[in-house]
Amino acid sequence: MPGSRQRPLLVVANRLPVSRGPEGWRASAGGLVTAMRPVMDRVGGAWVGWDDDPEGVPSRVDDFACDLHPVRLSDEEVAGFYHGFANRTVWPLFHDLVAEPVIDRAWWRCYQEVNHRFTQATVEAAGQQEQTPLIWVHDYHLMLAPRMLRTELPDAPIGFFLHVPFPPPELLGRLPWRDEVLQGLLAADAVGFHTVRYRDNFVRSVQQTFHGVNALGDRLVLPDGRQVRAVAHPISIDAQEFAELARSEETQRELEEISEQFAGRRVFLGVDRLDYTKGIRHRLQSIELLLERNPELRSEFAFVQVAVPSRDDVEEYRDLRTQVETEVGRINGRFTEPGHDVPVHYLYRGVSREKLAAYYRLADVMCVTPLKDGMNLVAKEFVTVQAATGGDGVLLLSEFAGTALEFGTDVVRCNPFDVEGMSLLMEATLGLDPADRRARIRRMAEAVREADVFRWVEEELDAVERSHLLP
Ligand code: GDG
Image 1: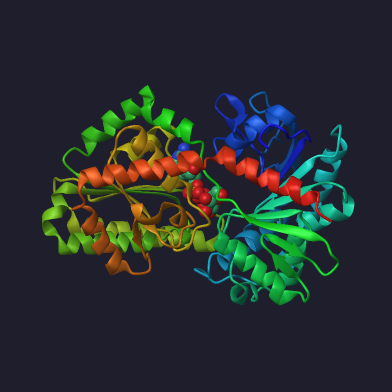
Image 2: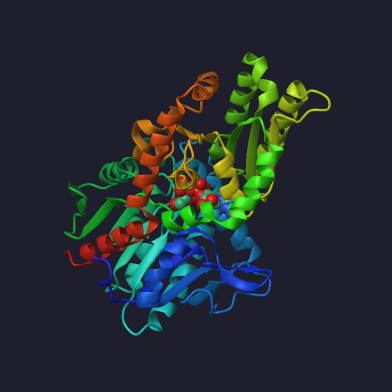
């Protein structure tokens, strides 16, 4: 029941909820931080996370009401735990092998040790609370922590939420340490996933790995009689905040500037971290085919790709950047008329939230075409911003994004591996009726408003509390 929660909350995540800006330490802009703010304000608590600031993160920041417990990692730990096991083993394995996962025993040992370090920091933080807190562990970096915490704090309610997909048992089976990972997760009271499909993959993996586990609805009954809930709760955004951002004066100013730059053009947009799961290369190839087939479109078309730098210490990400920039160069080289604008506008950087909202408003077609994506918040932000300003943009959405399960037939659904098919769909979007497009955007925004990020937090924490009462 919203608001009835009394226990302090202890969030354990790879990242702390604060970042240093020109005006000092502030709460970070992400959805999780925004969503936790009202709960933390009500019940108080603490946050354990990796401290990668050269001067160290303070233990308290005015802008976000909770105690911060930074975990310092050595260069070796960062290499083995973060760049290694988390981002080169688990990340590709959990995203359907769109890149080859690296199996390395030293990285695995480091992952175990760092999970232990986070656990110790969490136990310490829990000891400073007035009563036993509800511990909420996040994401694929910390899959061993629930079990380690259970040993140290047997009475604490423990939840885990996975922000990425959970793979089917046939793929998880490639991980030599899958048993330990599953046992790590099963020690939580509730394990949360974005979609029923990921939840079912987890349940099947557990049942195929361990004998005598019964699934009753969303409850797993383990051989020792203990029960764990495996639940599906799609993450979302603060829809009201995005709607206000869409209508703000600053966004309006940004929109006027870019509208002028792109006047007379149909604008297609992509917004992603530069990650090989996001399908940016396939998308560019579809754009190339679209322009090849439709010469008349070349003078009235622009594709804007915001590619936020990500994990550039990892070889696969540096290679991806080279490949993407080669594609962009080739398309612009092929289709730019001297003295005229280029068709592909590629930004290798993040933009301000107002500028991002302005791009969402400007776009005729938003291309969210990942090869695999746990959820994808960009899609939810786009429909919210468009609907808040009466827009009629089209959402071209990959069937392999978690979001695809929520929007039904209001999106133009694509298979991003089918480059030619995707380019035909891009072409088809240009002929859609504006009234139909506007109605679709309105319905999708309504779905986001109804299931916003605050609801996600409440449902997740309720599942942990209810499950904690089970045997
Ligand atoms: C992981 C999972 C899951 C992007 N560019 C800019 C910018 N952004 C913001 C977007 C959005 C966020 O970054 C990206 O979130 P996504 O959900 O799209 O993707 P991941 O980073 O891969 O997140 C994903 C998510 O966790 C939550 O569980 O949905 O599946 O992979 O909010 O707005 N923000 C600003 N400038 C940019 O240039 N200010």
